[in-house]
Length: 275
Image (cartoon, rainbow, N blue to C red):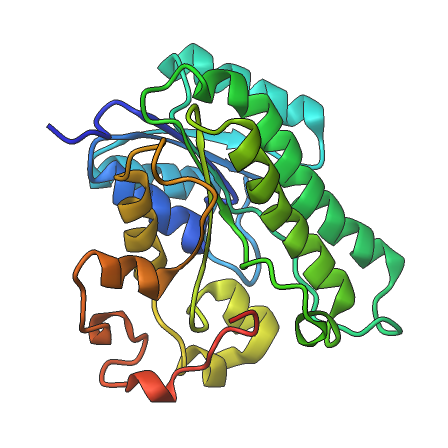
């Protein structure tokens, strides 16, 4: 029997993209997937809602709970967690995936967007973790995974987009601090891609078809997350993982299957701007 069968996974921003892919990977193992996201109605340009994601989770073999959540709002988040406990009885894994992005310089970043990135990325991750921790402490698995980059305090990571880097590094600092605070009780780790990942958000906001053709599929991130969750919480803690390195440690040598455009060579892929 899979170690994830009947376990409950709470994923923010899981209606599409990487968050959804991680949910689907664990649903195949018989896990309960909580799709905690804002998209209850179809977006005009981005596919998927919490309800269509829930249908896909159940088709994959898991149970699903779609809940409307804005991680900036403590009341809706608490209500979603209460509903999770009522439905499934606990929380075993938390994936802090919800994030806002704007790659602009200081003068081009309006404060409304600055606040949005910090409220969703840093504050949202801290708050969601805080509210889930009491239940994670009771789990024999007890994993938290933040979709956040390695902490690297060098000018080159900040200069092009100070506001965004600060907000994403806030998620990374949650890993650094909470991994120490809850050592041996809950595993806190970060995961980040080596290359661009082909998501609707990337296509819509960052580079269109040209970027997509130089990207890998979301499955490289979901397979990496699965490998991390399969490790013991006491031994796998406080790491800033890169997807490719995780899978190499699992014995994978050929990454061609993850190319968004089949046949694309690794050297033709677009490196992520935090790696």
